[in-house]
Length: 187
Image (tube, rainbow, N blue to C red):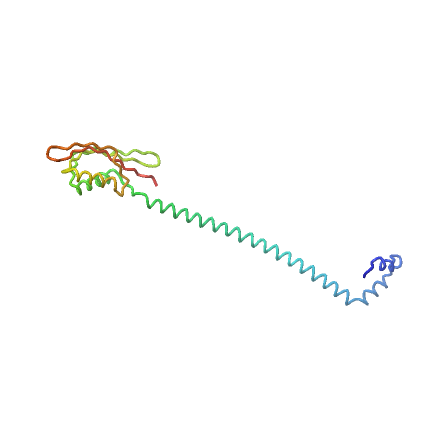
């Protein structure tokens, strides 16, 4: 074992001579150079390892941030796709003229005669508009009237029968009064 006290006792700072030191250094020149190279190599390796570890951590942080951004972008794209799917599932907009035309085509399909029609009124409700149409109609028979009303209720357009009243005549004709609403969602 190395005993530093023993070595230190052999060297006294008063006895220290520059020539002796130079002589010792020259005698052990190769060992000293090797020791300096080994120590320098170890220090260089430690610095390189530390830099590499630091760069690795920075790279991992950057990858993590990019993954979060990609996740956010994918979530946004999914939300936009869902919104577009929702919007496409909404009934198509219909104006007052189209509503009257649609009701007239349904009436013609089931042999219902519209005898009077009040103008359509559109009311803005904020998120949606409501169009109301009131009319008087005559049907040849009860079955055609019911099919006409069912066609209105089952329409792909957002139609609703608000009020209905009717009466049957002696000849089997059905006279009825109806109010229909259409809802137009603002998109």
